[in-house]
Length: 578
Image 1 (cartoon, rainbow, N blue to C red):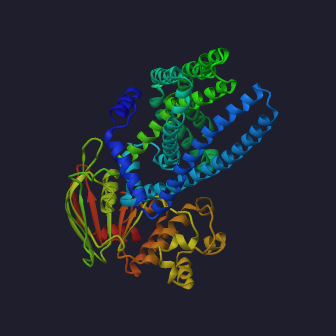
Image 2: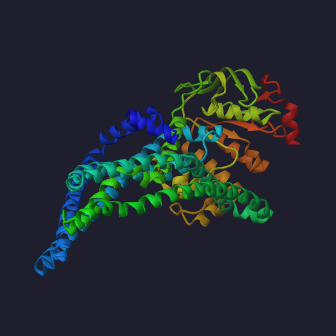
Image 3: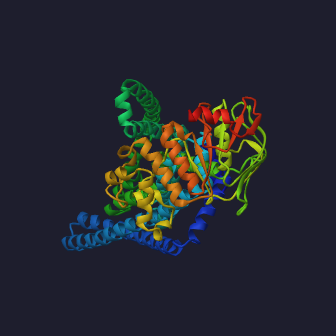
């Protein structure tokens, strides 16, 4: 183990013993999972195939030796016999190698699917995806889940099998090479050690460079995805030139880092290419004199070359696989960073959100919220209870304070202290400022999970009619068609679709984030009245210009974080009615 960690330090690989222990724990979890039995069976088959491949390689070295010796002695009968035997052994080796490769890929796919499902579950659990996005501390988590896990599973399995195969090869061919020339065996070991040390020295910058390259590739790809997803807006606003500048900047970062990788690979290639070429002549330099002196058959030369090549390949894994090792080290470090980011504990002084089923109100107790960037107080000591049936409009000169209150109530804001109580996530809905229409059919978009099993179509269609969404239903082609909803529906239709989702779910409360920005005053008033008629209490974040006539209480938050609650005055309501 000390040798392994010495090598890790020499390579400057960002892998610690804690990461290694975590990796071992992951392997144990895989073995104990629902796919563990199949994974173990496939791995045992791979070990058996490795034994078979190495046994066939040793057998082939002897067949090849006798074949060449028959040629030397001009023995036609022996030549024909060993030629057929050679073909037979090669045929069996081909079948075993193909099945071995198939088994390896099957196990790799099984492992990747299991690990990716776990990563997705953790990524979406407890809104980890939102925390990573809001903190902006970990670039490209999506690429780490999709690409890095694929690389981890495939490369780990490949390296494990390579190491086992190298161990079997050393055992199988050490005796063969020692029996031919003990000195040649010593040369093979010394040559491989020297080659490994020089490879580490020349190639150690690749680990950091490959780590950075993965992020820069993902950043460049994300900019291209942005252009595709906002194609219409880009075309209307004619932002092509500025986007081109940004894309070129990302491309320059990508190519400059990759150029450095190419330079390191060039220097490494000068050594590894020469190293591999010398392998072809070293056995002949030691065994050919024995043949010339009549102490060995001609076939022994070819056998020694085969044995030397296999043995040196086993001892020289670092030389032959260094580029893959450097990529692998970067992938392991990136996935470990992702895991650490997804397992961070909740801040010690974060607002405490409690669910009180059946309490019939949303309450704030001594709630103070801060701006995480500069520590400014956004809301100070808010103590307020909003019972069911009392609709409230919150307004503030600072939109940051409104956003903080909205997110804290949804348990998404962890910068502050105090208590928040509400009747549970099934009893309170949150509608963001920009409507979100997820992928899926219209039925799946409108209904909660499992709700589609019992809610009849006539009830869905009646709610769509209430919200004047018949035209949107016609454009969609029914409840069970999938479309790119952002392109098919207008912003107003998407917002009203969100309201339809609320009506069908019938929560006790709904928290609205600046709905007037995507709806005109008249349709918004109609929608709010519709919510009140359905017995749904709405709490709205509004602008200073928003009218209070649809609300029972006004929460006014000042720039210094102080606040007050009051009913709308008759004068305020009267101005609107006039």
